Image (tube, rainbow, N blue to C red):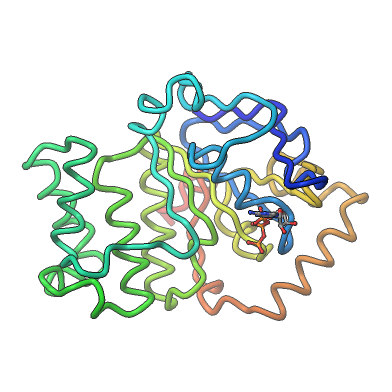
Length: 261
Ligand code: ATP
């Protein structure tokens, strides 16, 4: 679904991302873990096709983001850490605007807006202007807008920051549902616990370099990463995400019949 090969992005004399390669398969929630300034946003923006990079190849479902940007962008969505939504529009105008860009049929957009509007308790407020929305409501609206064209790959930059626990739970549930239906999610976090509870696979980035990727068990089993994990744990302690106690079962656990218990 997503293949990043030898991605390098240089600012001035510093490599923000340095020869990074990873791939994500359909059905996977893939966590991208790293401390502040590690290179997560730079990678996500490069994949989203909104940041030019110096070296490497990025393909989304076979479409090269540089050679076939329209085809690649049609099948993905990017939710930045601080979404910029047109403040002067109402929420429903904004959602229709995004749906128009992606040429989503009337029936499909109505069904998706209803589904996610009800889920995020926004349906009653969709006629209100975006500038009347709180930060968390804007984040939920940005997620709805990202889902309106039913993307195969979703990129999310720190998706849980600023969400209350129940909204974070709903977002995690939605992420799982999308991946169980064959989609893939690549999201960044600097909170280890979030990745541990939610992801099928993770990649650790430090100073622009990929230090390890694989299942959480594989990655945690690497003793050379002790220092990285300590950094992460300290970060988690400093910025405790209150939603963390709510667990969403992982794909493997579901396969073992988690839901039947
Ligand atoms: P955070 O968790 O704080 O969001 P991050 O892992 O997303 O961090 P990036 O935003 O990708 O990190 O930044 C990686 C490096 O690139 C940092 O050293 C940052 O200072 C640098 N950088 C990012 N954007 C620019 C820019 N426009 N100009 C110069 N340097 C930049």
